[in-house]
Each structure stands twice: as structure tokens, then as C-alpha cells.
Image: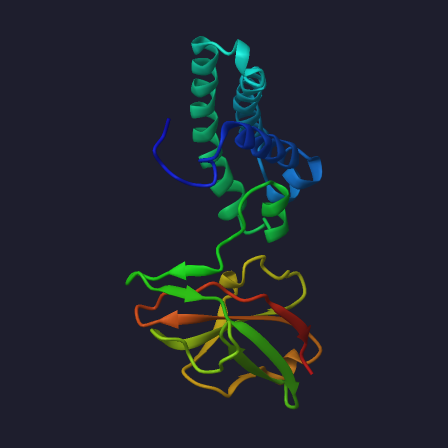
Amino acid sequence: MSKKKDQFSVASHLLAAKLTTLVTYSALAEVAERLGIIAADIKELSDAVTPFVAAENKMTNRSVVTMAMTQTRDTAEEKVVEVARRFAPKWYYNNGAATATDILNAALEPHSVVRISHEGAAIEMNVMKVESMSGHRFCVTVRDSIGYIGKPVNIVFIRVRYFVVRVGTTIPAAAADFCKFIDSSKHTIILTLPADDAGLQIAIASCYVDAQGVEGPYCAMVTTNIS
């Protein structure tokens, strides 16, 4: 078996349940279409999960388990884990169309709430508050996990990304894909939009950035209208 440790490094009966859910959810027509999962990849995963689950189910009665049965199960498990480790990142973690809810419904572990910088220090997720102001402006306040407004240790500034919804556009699933942003080393953070944007919808999210320029995880995005 692979020595790599991740969410698929669990007891065989738990892995069988996890992967069965992953296949079932991914194969739903609405899910496959929305996430763009190609049929060939679903088939590859299903074809690996089916023999593994069948072999694991035969292990329930330990009194009749043989070395051959164990070897068959272990071989199938090795194969299915290799496939799952390619499938999950491709269609869930690195797929902008996949939401946090999709990840949970697929029996996968949610995104981490911290990101590790090049210096090895964890960057936490902030908590953001957005208040509308006159003149097409927003006041953005960011606090850490314990409610402190100051920047955490090793954090240089706060990055506020935003996306204005215009005709023919939709809000990206990941805030990191918002093309516009402002950086601020201190509060108060004021986001000012052009007068022509009045009435349009806007999505806003923020993260901490360390001295190496590494972005931390983005907070939950706030959607509102530009006054």
C-alpha cells in the first residue's frame, strides 16, 4: 500500500463508504454537468471502486477470510486510492465550479481554513464585515479569529478582492479568481467604485498576505449592490 497519508488513508471499510459516496454524487447528471466531470473519469473511478467494495464486503465475516481474499482486497484498494487521488483534486479541489457543499456531499474533506506560506507559518482565515457608504463606496473591516482588528504575526497587509457583475458575467466560485483587488496595511479600508457601477451587484472577499506575498485563505464572500 502507498505510504502517502491523506483522507484516503483510512480503514478499508470507511474508505469503501467514502468512495461509494464519491462515485454516486459525481455521477449525478446535474453534478457532472455543472462541474464538467467527463464520463470517462467517472467510469474509471467507478470501475476501480466496484471491485474494491465487493472485495471489502467479503471481509465482513472474519472467520472465513483467507490470505487470498485479503490480497485481492488490498490490490483493489491500492488501485482505487491511486485513481481517487487524481479524481478528487481534478474535479473538486482544483475545479472553480465545485463549491464547498459539493466537496462535503462527495464525502471529501473540506478545504483547510489555513494556508501554509513558504516560510512554514500558517495564515489564518479572517472574518470580514462590509458596510455600504455614500458615493459608491464600501467600508471593509477585517478581524482575526478571536476578533482582533490588528494584523496577525507575519502578516504584512490585507487584500480585498472584488468582482462587479456586469451583463453577461457571473461571480467566480473562488474569490481568488476575482481579477480586481486593493491592498491595505491598516484600517480603515475603503473600496471606491466608479459612479457608472451604481446599481450593479458586487462580490467582495478578503485574505491576509504575508511578507513573501502568499495569500491566506479567503473569507466567505459578501454580495451586495453598489449604491
